[in-house]
Image (tube, rainbow, N blue to C red; front, side, top):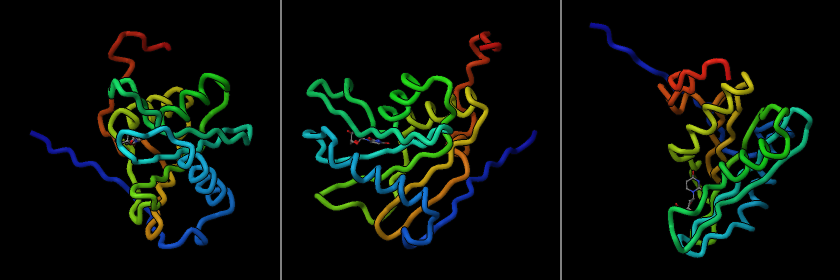
Length: 164
Ligand code: THU
């Protein structure tokens, strides 16, 4: 018998000014995106911004629907838009923020499991880690890659399409 243990490494900051210029820009873009969220059912506005290797910044926000499962999270809206329009550009970083009760959350908001799976496959696809910037108003978490949030993510190789 063998016991496996997994680590998540989180760099914690207490103020946006401690981040580098690009990361601050990404957080501000994610905040702008959150304001445009369509979330009449939850009232929870999530914003995401994605930095591509051509320096383009793509934004997304959560899009809800009265048929609840038809909606989509901010992170996947941003990643899918980026991959749909810039299929050859690697995603280098992503900032995520959220606003509940009309205030940005004090704590960082972590992506849901489905978004983690999409980030996991995006990292595999481009063979490039996605730096995550999860920005609360009082606490900011930086992660060097997204896959550490999903140990044993579903691997496309299981579909016997290993060369994809
Ligand atoms: N939501 C996101 O946009 N991202 C996440 O990672 C978790 C949740 C959205 C979905 C829904 O519109 C609202 O937040 C409440 O769950």
